[in-house]
Length: 475
Image 1 (cartoon, rainbow, N blue to C red):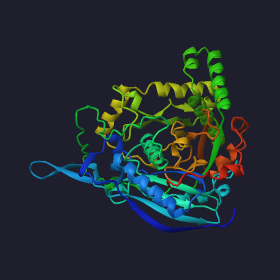
Image 2 (image 1 turned 45 degrees about the vertical axis):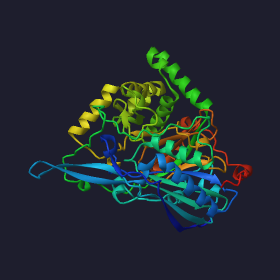
Image 3 (image 1 turned 180 degrees about the horizontal axis):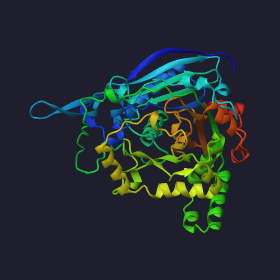
Image 4 (image 1 turned 90 degrees about the vertical axis):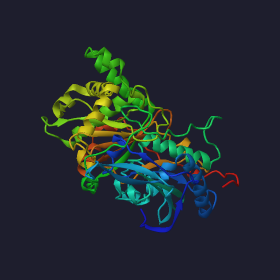
């Protein structure tokens, strides 16, 4: 790969249309992310058929329109102290100060870097990808003074990369990708694939008491600065892995047959592709780590609470509503001996147990003992399944010159054993997995025949795919 130099050329601040200033209190789910990294996700595109200055103007104008409905994204966090009648500090709360402070668009150039350098097929993700994202090293508590959202537009030799940095205490991935889809829809003059416009975000925060207004969550500290940790990510490597719809169906069927042979008809009936893929990753990574057979391991997964609450929260709820669920503990030896079907069913049992009652119990437990999550909470002996193949990262992220070629992420929130799931390049219910491991464990995984038998070849893009189609003069 040729040597490259990243040059930052400009910065623009984008603000929403003026509106009355107000605050939105953060909930337990939001506050728990204040010590974690910003979300860093990005999309690689063919080079647009118009100049970069025109592209930046186009993205700025459409982003300002998107911020009209999503105005909290342009705010900042603020911490308030709560006192008793005698003036003694009882605690503090954190809110979004919605005063149109703005978000940033940065323009950079990566000299000597081509699309093929960013997404080499069937290879580890190159480290240069980390330089394509803004706000590197920021934690969500920094949203008190940093923008809650920033995008870096990086010119490549034959393409462009949009790298997003988004404050995770503002919302989860579901709300983030809905926001980006709305922005992209405005940019291409097509708010949604259907004639009806997308529903506006639901900005009122959820609380367990489900009252008409959400009161601030008061934590027993004068402020939260003493709870914020800045943990540099460990030295890790990552690969993007493609799983076809046929492979996923085969993994699902294999798990089903193993469970039926073991007499677990209920487990066999409940098998999903997500559970079967999680089993494959869990067991394969456990083998690659060569863990002691008596070492305990778990499979954890980020799960959306919206449809599991009673009453349900609508899909357009704007905020965090995710938890990490976990399978029952199992030793490495038992996990490998019990087989693919058992591990698949173990993930299914963890998902089924995550009910409205379980969610509310976890909220109450957090209020009794508030915790701010960060990399220390990742289990070095387990795996973590994150993100979602349901996020519309392709058709919904066409900003006017064609859908992206591929998604990628920065170095934020990476840990040994984390797998982030994206929609697959092939569409049709295929899944791409971004798997992060130590270099030693990745090398051993790359020698695992059972695992690689399920991975689809990651073919290079044909030259025609790198040529953006001309669009109208609306840009």
